[in-house]
Length: 173
Image: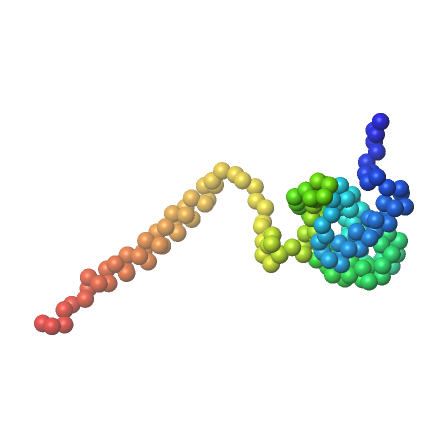
C-alpha cells in the first residue's frame, strides 16, 4: 500500500528522476514554458516552486542551495535576477499547468507548464490594482445627506444651461 507516499517516482530510479527534474527545471527557467507529460509537469511543479521561493532571498546560502539542485550557473543567474524580480510580491503559485491533447504515439496526457508571470496571453501587461478592503455594512445615516447634496449640485448646474436659450432676443427687430 502507498499510504503517506507523496512522491511520484515516474517509473525511474531516484538518481534518474532527480537528474530529469533538474534538467526540466533548467529548461523551464530558460524557456519560460515547456511541453511534457501531465505526470512530469505535476512532479516538476513540486520541484521548481520551492527553488523559486528560495531565489526571492538573494543570499550566498540560497544561491548555493539552489545550485545544488540545478547545477547550472547560467540558469541560477537568470533565476535570481529575472525570475525572482518578477515574482517578488507573489506568495507562491509561480507555475501554471495547462492540459493539452493526448500524444499521438502512445496516447499520453500532455501538458504545458509555464511560469505565470511570463505569459502574455493572460494579461501580463495589465496593471493589478490594489483595492482597499472595506467591510460591507448597511447604509450609514451620514452618507444619505451627502448624496442628497451631490444630487442638488448636479441639478443646479443643469438648470442654468436650460434657461440660457430662453433669454436670447431676436436681432432682426
